[in-house]
Image 1 (tube, rainbow, N blue to C red):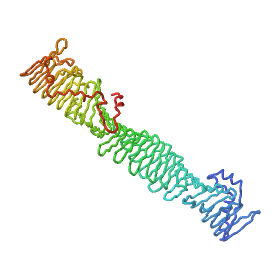
Image 2 (tube, one colour; image 1 turned 90 degrees about the horizontal axis):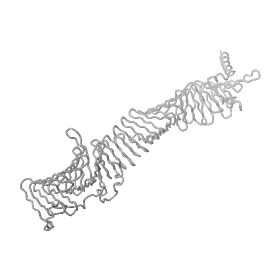
Image 3 (tube, rainbow, N blue to C red; image 1 turned 45 degrees about the horizontal axis):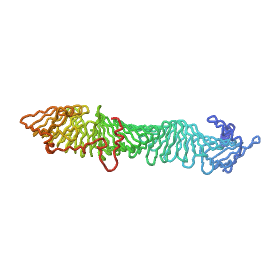
Image 4 (cartoon, one colour; image 1 turned 30 degrees about the horizontal axis):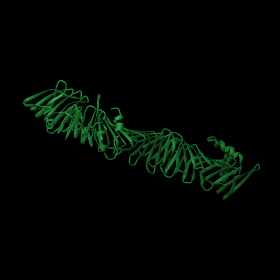
Amino acid sequence: MKFLQFLAYNLIVLILMSAPDLVAQSGDRPESRESGAKEKSPIRWIDAKDVKVITESGERTHYLKGNVELRQDTMYFFSDSAVLKQNLLYATGNVVILQGDSIAIFGDTLNYNGNTRYGYLTGECFIEQKKGVLFSNFLEYDAHLNKAYYNRGALLTDGEFQLTSKQGIFNLNTSQMLFRDSVEIIGDDFLLKSDSLLYDLNLSRAYFIAPTLIKEGDASIYAEGGHYDLETGDAVFYKNPQYQTEEELCLADTMTFDGPNNLLHLKQNVFYQKDSLIIRAHSLLYDLDTEIVTITDNALVEEGKRRIQSDTIIYDLNLDKFYTRGRAKVSEEKFELEADSIYYGEEQGIGHAYGEVEWHDLESGMKLYSEQAIFQDSSSVIKAFGNRPLMSYPSDTDTMYLAADTIFSFTQMMQTDTHRLTLAYYDVRIFSREMQAVCDSLSHMENDSLFRMMYQPMIWMDTTQLTGDTIDVQLSEGKISGAFIRKNAMVLTSPDSIHFNQIKGREIRVTFREGSLRKVRTYGNAEALYFAMDEEDAYIGVNKSESSEISLIFEESELESIKFYGNFTSNLTPMDMATRQSFRLKGFNWNVDRRPRSVRDLRGLQKGGELPVDQILGRKE
């Protein structure tokens, strides 16, 4: 029986040893064949419990059993049994190949050609090198190149990760592996899939050389180039990289991921989308823990009808708030806002703008310039302050400018429509080519174009001055059409700033035509003082009249007619008999020193920076 077993064993050995290249059909390696032919080294057995040597036709065959140990140069072979013939080795049972102190290859059987230094391992095969282990049921080993090959599937373990593929090459000199066909890397809540992948075992780094898909948590990453460090989570993705979650999509030329800090950096042609939010820029840094994105270089954020542009935008995706660095522009459905920096919080719905603020109401065309502003997009609220905010009201014929310490403008819901209400307070000044005015406070309702000026208001138009406790000014097509003066009302006109026609009363209604005084009607304790002229326009006297109501009609700022209502008195004093007192009604105050002569006069002297008036006036309204 022992003889038959020994004979069967020898037959298998002889078949394998006589056809050492049978397995080469599964994966020929031309480079190993050429290199193997250049240098040949004999395989020598070192130790075994049982050794038998058979010589046939002058050739020796060694049959080794029990703790077999063989050597070829610096490479050692261990097995339970082995057959060595003509530098061909067949080993079975607990086969081990050791190469130096860092490479260990294991298998159930080994068929090895010592001349070509090429062998095949079958059964439960695995390679141990440093911190990684490669498992397969069939391995080819090129000892000359120190490479292992497989084409029947293999698994590599590296720490908590497992890498699998159907084919691959393991370079044991560099600890790098080329995985091919159905490549997968599996870890804790991590999955990578690709057709081909280069893996560096020293760095635990996977290099993408083909389209690659990574799933980590709820995120999916696609790239056709780059690398991923399994230990640190650091990664670089390029060649059409894409990052996607259930709510988000990121596209860019290059994506860099900082694993320890959980940061995603997108570079060049950046596109980011989360629900209705869209971001475009050349660079975006995304903190995945805080959900804060830093967008730089031509940054653009769009959400609904809101559009934000700046050099740098820091956006909190969780709280939906942002602030900017560098000149920024925010566009909404009803307004546009520009400033050196802008902060906005969605939860409060309030924003702050700083530095050369420019606000534009898109419906009315009204513009506001200030050093600082607080705004609210839901109701188009804007509160401007700092260094005399300036507001412009454009029209086809003229532009009116208004400046004050603070300007507050907001939309108000009326019965059938929404209209804008503007409040300006403290040292209000107005300038247009047709009209100039000052007051302490002012309100303006857009729907009826009515300006209400309060607390010592004064209005000048050509040679006319209006004063009172409160003045309501009516505009029509950008021009003043009328005014209503309440309490201590007075209208002065003068062709030469020496002789003044004066109308005084409790209330006065004034009508203008083409920028000139047309009609004045005075109510309550009405008084009128005007200079009578002859046909040659020479002054002949001063006429003073009193009545409960007086109506005066002017033509080209000259008195044309006067009408009294109720009882009246009228006295004419010749010029040569008129005293200085007879030239003035009580409360007379011709104050042209306060009259603004240009837009520059609206600002006054302020501490700190100044509004860029030259730039404002240079813009087309």
